[in-house]
Image 1 (cartoon, helix red, strand yellow):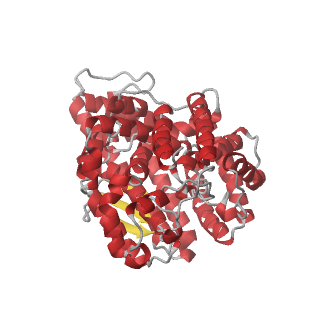
Image 2: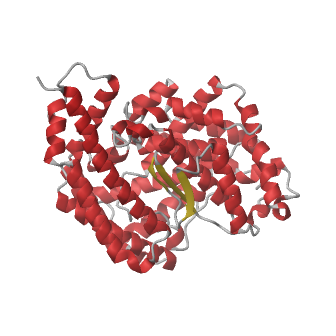
Image 3: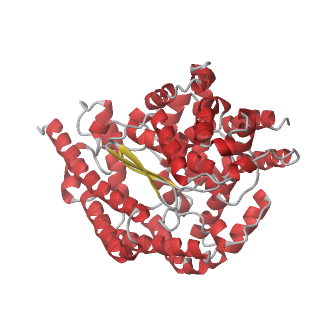
Length: 506
C-alpha cells in the first residue's frame, strides 16, 4: 500500500522548487521596473522568457503530474486516502486546479506570451512618456490575440472572458459580475452628481512642493506603523506602484509626486495592504497553495481597506496628521485637521485611476472592464481604444482626457498581458466594505484605537480573518466565512453614502 504521507511530502518539495523559480522571475520583473538599465530590455526579455518556460515546465512536469495523480484523481478530483487533513485536502484541491489549467497552455505559448509582454512593457513605458498610443498599438494587438488564444486553450463556459477572469478571481463569472457592476455604476454616478452640486473644498495646500526625500521619510513611518519588518521587506520607486514577492521577501514600490504627496502616501498604504496580506500568510508553507493569495479580489480588498477605508478616515489622521505637519511645517502648519480631512476626501472626476477618489474609483474600473471584455469579444478593435476610452470617460465621469498618457496609456496591466485583472479592483472594494462592516461590530471602539496610533489590532484581525488561510477556501467562501455575507454591492454603497453624505452635507 502506498505511503501517502511520503508521497505528499515529495509533492510539497516539488511544488516548492517551482515556487523558487517563480520567485526568481518576480525578482527580475521587480528589477526591470526599478533599477534595470533601459538598454538591458532585450536581454531581460530573453531571461524572463526562459524563466517562464522553466516555471511552466516545472509546474507541468511528468514528476509533478505523477505525484499529484497518485494522491488525487486528476479527472474526477477524488482523493487517494481518507486520512488527509483539511489543509492537505485544500493543497491537493488547489494543486489539481493549477495543474489542469497550466497543462492546457503549451510551453511554446507560455514562452511567446512572456517574450511579447516583456517587449510590450518597454514599448508601453516609452509610449506613455511620449503620450503616443500608436507606439503601443502593435503590442496591444498581439496581447489581445494572445489572450483570446489563452481563453480558447483554457476553455470556458458562456463567454471567453470568463476564462481570463477565473485566472485572477477563481469561480467568478461575468454572469455574476455584470449585474453587480451595473447597480454599482448607477449608484456611484448618482452620488457623484449630488456631490458636484456642493462647494469644492480647499485643496491648494496639497499641491505645493513637498521634497521627495521628506516624503519618503513619512512613507517609511507609515510602513513602520503598519508593522512591516525591515528584514523581510523594502520600499523602492517605480513608474507604477506595485507589490511583489513572497512571505520571505517582500518588495513594494511607490511613485513620488513633487506636488502631490498624498498620491505617494496613499500608494504606500495601498501596497502596504498587499504587503501585509503577503507577510500574513504562513511563510513555513512557502511553495504550497496555503501560503499563496487566494485571489486578486481578496488581495485588493486588503490594499483598499488600508488605503481608503482606514487611510482616508478621520481617526487615522488624528494620529498621523500632527506627524505629517512636523515633516512639512511650511506646507501644512496653518491647516487644521478638519480642512485636511475634507481635502483628501475631495470627490471630483479625474483622469488617473490610481489617484481617483473613493466615489469615482470603481467607475474607472468599470470603464476598463467593459473595454477589455469588448476586446475579447472582438467588438472593439485595438486602434479604436483611445476614442472608446474617451467616450466612456465622458459618459461615466463627465471628463475627456486630452492626451493618451492620462487616458488609455495610464495603466501597466495590458502591457503585462493581464486581461481579466481589472474587475478584481472593484471586487476588492466590495470585499473591503464587507470586512469593514464586520470590523465595526467586532471593535466598537475602532476609531479611538486608531486615533491613538494603534494599527496592530487591524493587522492581526485581518490576519486571523483572511491572511492565515492562504488558499484554504475559495474566495467567495473565504469572504463569506470572514463577514457572514454573500458578495453584494450594498455594503460598499452604504459605506460611501454614509461617509460622503456627511462630509458634503447632502
